[in-house]
Image (cartoon, rainbow, N blue to C red; front, side, top):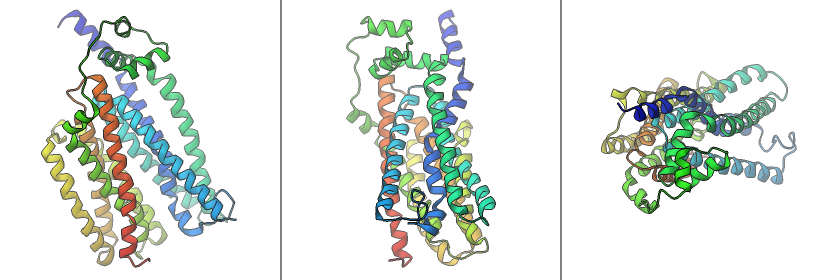
Length: 368
């Protein structure tokens, strides 16, 4: 191996473990607020419009205010996921895996915290509201911590500087601007500024999407199915069981735990699914969970429902990580960045449609 190759390999490895840890924490930060909202749905079902903002004196105005806040969370979530996955797509696939695992960890952590707060505040006056306030306070603190971590720690790691400089040399103007704004000037970015890189042939967003339409469709369908069941169906269609009011919370926690575990499976090379046809086939077969959940809600006991929720979480995390780790390979930095953004667009489109389709369970349940 040449001396230059050895030094570049050393730079790539330096700080890789720390970068993986930070990506995991940032993944938690990207979804902890949203998961806090979904984990306190029992509060909204029990007392809404007795809402947080008015201490139990709700009105249509306060209801619209809550809806606006939720919409703001969704808007921020889209920006963060698109920006982060676009940024990490031009680095090594392990960073994407860590970030996605962190997103799943956010669900597992909030579910665990929700179970603890329910146990602590269950017999206390105004306990549900206090638990909700605790959730939001923790989320707010963690969000500010992640902003600091990304801006002042992650960007200065040698491995991150290396990948961003490499992307800038390949023609990524966004990354070049980010490096300059952070006061980071390297030989690679200097070459770009001096005009050594000219007339780079880049794929348009349309061409990128056409070449990766199967990956985009995978992500769209994965999250359409998941969000059409989780979490709304688990609160509306679970019936009466031995666990009582704990039952939907246990189902949500079960999904989040298996979603988290499954996002580490692709790190085992022999278990990582890379076949594009294989990914699409499994994504389509996963829709068999719809009649399975419908049957279980009407005729099966809580054990069968817990098993189905486990399968839902297991396949959700595993397939999403496999797709997002495989898709950016073989492209230059600018294309990887753009492709990451495009794939997140389809992922969030699936979440939106899945959440909308969640209302169909209410119709089938005779709630209208």
